[in-house]
Image 1 (tube, rainbow, N blue to C red):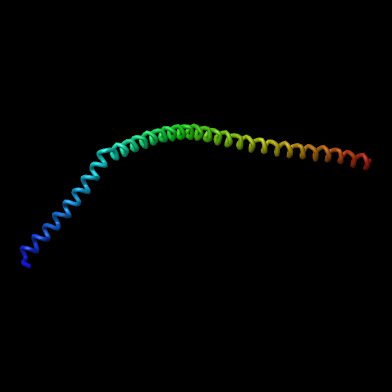
Image 2: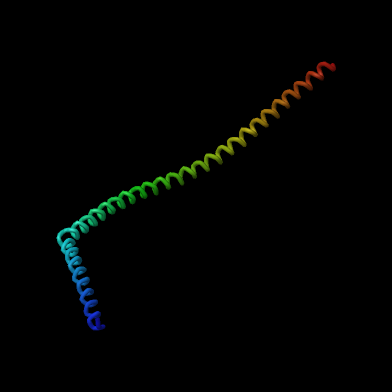
Amino acid sequence: MSFATFSNIATAIFCLAVLVQSIRMMRSLKAVKEGALTEVVTALDKSTAEARAVLGELKMALLQCAGSARVLDNSRAIADELGLMIDIANASAERLVAASSAGRIAADGGAGDGRLREEAA
């Protein structure tokens, strides 16, 4: 078998392979043309609409979270103010207790001195 005959047979085999692949590709293109492409486009359109709806819901949720964040910031400020008021009230109560104790000691001390004077006399 000569080189020319061998190359002609190889070329014929490659041409047959190209014809088989061309037939397969034509069948696939017909399938896409007949309906698969429209189904894909319909599915993409549907998923896009669903994604838009979800994004709208997420936007509403984020707006609600922003409102909640503002309320939370306000409540933290109020809690800080209440803490300061409690500290002031505690300090006032401690001063009242100290003044009351000093008053009792002074009253008891004065009465005790009077009794001692009476007993000594």
